Length: 380
Ligand code: ADP
Ligand code: MG
Image 1 (cartoon, protein in one colour):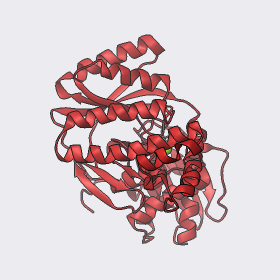
Image 2: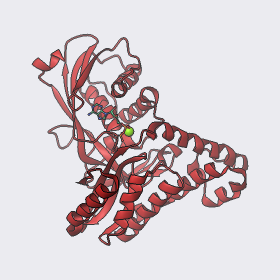
Image 3: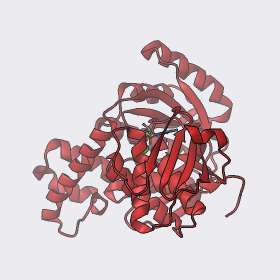
Image 4: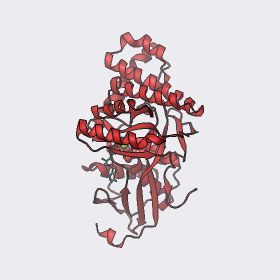
């Protein structure tokens, strides 16, 4: 793209990916989650280009860019462009202060690996334009408009967790977020002598978007039935195990399984948060394993590769717990591993994974990190 020849950015934004310690698929059921941003991120460079409405966006990693006109926003045939266009569309509903800009995107955050590169992309763009054009959006505005952009342009009916974690996280903490009220509590996480290791299956089964929406729909079907017996229920967040059992005869088998996962998963989030506060890492680990069991057999959003890696983790006494993290069907497993055993665990998992699937595992440590920020400024 031509603008790259003379590009001198006015503003650099760091927009991180996230992990979720526990609470999978609970966000769109108005429940609890426990995410944090990680050090892997997308870096945006911005420059106003003096034009009224012409914008250029270039992804360095994908080696491709596109031009757009702010006055003619519509969905694209090209998937990644929709994350950009969707955000611009949402911003245009709130303000007309955005003018022409050029922007490059550089990332060390693997895309489609359950670390939410999509939210990093949306929120980084919104955060950057807010700074560049002084739009007056609050952080929660940025979170919410990015979530809506993912619904309308990218086509995933996601909850609020990914965008919230990418923007709001703080170093050394996980966020206990109530997705119903958006109340959040920062919980310090000190895992020492353990640490968090991600194993990237490097598979991303293409079911992710379609099945995501199917799961959301199945949960809504559950709520419709449960409501007939408990009229106060508006989401699975309001449902206890006892209420669910009461309704079991009226729910089809699949819908029951989905609901029963969500109800138990919500409970697990609160238990993990309490265990972190009392420094009971063994309990945290056990709950991670339990969650994966639910992800795999009840919610059915795992895959053979993730199941295999969690099973491998279970054979190593230096691993306290493991589960697939993210929307599902591949991506990364999150493992709580003793510091001194990290190398041997990664070596074993890499070897066994290669033998089983003939895929080179990618493994890295992650640390709870700060949310979206202007690069170079530590406190804003
Ligand atoms: P996840 O959010 O778990 O990474 P998604 O499927 O929700 O997975 O989002 C991944 C999509 O985000 C990619 O397919 C691509 O469209 C977009 N994306 C991620 N990183 C980049 C990048 N560096 N440049 C352009 N698009 C990207
Ligand atoms: Mg995503």
